[in-house]
Length: 125
Image (tube, rainbow, N blue to C red):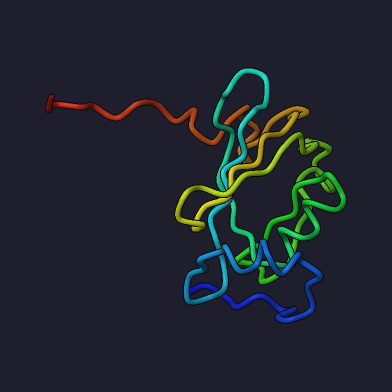
């Protein structure tokens, strides 16, 4: 079960942005990190209003860890920093796309992307 973010209602996220977000039951939205110049999809993490606010104002990706129940800034312990180039919401407001300049691996396994595990077979179409 996902933990609820520890700092509800402490955000300074622009109210116009906050109004567009459609959060899950825990106040979270998925955030896709994509390499800004190649389009490579790097990883998916979770953000609440505070994590998005920190991401927008610091230029570094901040996520909410559901397993550790705390905020984390990508690269603070690994050195594999994500510097934000742009942020967009999808048409439904339920997913954030963060275009980044990734230094080093994006995945906790040490791979460049979390999607290096191999393609799944597609049998239809």
